[in-house]
Length: 280
Image: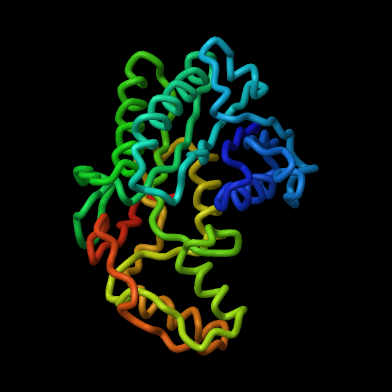
């Protein structure tokens, strides 16, 4: 099975490529930076194709460009973690929709795209895939609109669409501004105090390795399509998540709770329903 992975050198992409290789897939890995890709452990095991979205050309047949993949998982998305930038709606949304529909019109029959829990907006509690989407920031709005446009596109261009709605993940290689990376940097420097929010937010965390396992399973099947929450299904406060992580690492640091304000684009308490994910 030939699988195209865009955003292959990203935080999730690196792990997804490795998991697909374990399934004996022929992986076509793509990113904008070949030099960075060449340092990945998987580089010699895949067919690598450089592609920068700034160079997108509607006249190009990208299905042929990427060697006619059987399946595709679209992880690429520029401009993160700046969720509030208008760039997502003005540049990313039309460009990524044009790119994906180009592949579909030219022969792609099976597409998996990663979305975000921010599509649910400020709704609290256990979030199910059949709930209304109410995104409030440009990133969440753009992802939600991309999914809706692809769903409409299916009417005249049939293809399998799996929309993997990601919640919170953590692991090595994560963006340096993330809670997990900031905490590990503080521990590595031997800091005595770690500044964070009040930590009372309830979230749904999953190690990136497990996220990649789930994505690989979703990509390689056709039984379950549409929106699929990718998360643990287990609510936990951010404060308890940090304390549990420190305990597992046998590390100690004083938590300066309340140093940072709570984000205004997220509800205080939410986690994902994993009924569909579990059915895989």
